Length: 334
Image 1 (cartoon, helix red, strand yellow):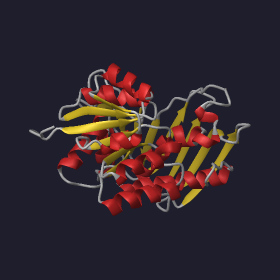
Image 2 (tube, rainbow, N blue to C red; image 1 turned 135 degrees about the vertical axis):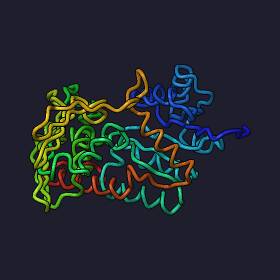
Image 3 (cartoon, helix red, strand yellow; image 1 turned 180 degrees about the horizontal axis):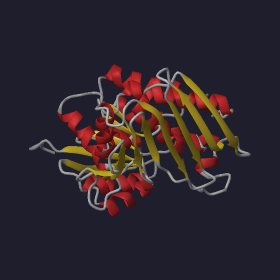
């Protein structure tokens, strides 16, 4: 294939629902092309390729990573397989956008980051919240002092998951539980606004399988700020977030992790709804901004994104590890 433009050509590793959503959003994004899909099942790869109009389908991760025309691979496996899948691609010299959480624990995350840095290959966690233009606008307002000094952050994420013990959300071998699948969003949001905490407290109700079903987290900061966070696979929560300061607050609506607007409350003023044009592609799920950031980085020859820095991802993983330690959740290999 002869390159005649600056199109970034993508491969997708895995064929589940999140891979399908990413493929649909990528199709609406200028400058990107979904060229290949890889799976451990040739049949699954072919079905996905047929459904999404992908030219090349591979029946192994290694074949996808070896495709010379693929610039970057989106790793969409369950997080228990992230390290293995991403390593195959990084060793082959492919840039990687890896779904959140980056890995099961901090040790694995450090291993992946070290590999990417050693190989000089781009790596980014797919924390779409950090790339969302509405969230970026929120951060600008906070930095400009629109709500004064931040004193508290709140965020929650809860769903009702299947009760079957074999479901991935209840299987410790697959990194099950609320924290890594859902709680990573509130924790990441708190890190985005307040940075790394100086204190971590947590409580959880565990399932018979030994994963967290409902978890509450309290993060403390030397600035005097606190973050109150929760996640659950037993109940559907509002899934909202708020940042409160000495002179106002910002409220993000349901689906705070990929918002299209927020409400700004300031002393002496009417509440203001803030929207950012084209926060997501029409009909899209919200993966466009993170994919666009990856492509920008690749065109600029950057190996890390300033929006989703790897050191920040490692800091979040450290907090997740601390929460699991406090609530007594362990995974094979910890």
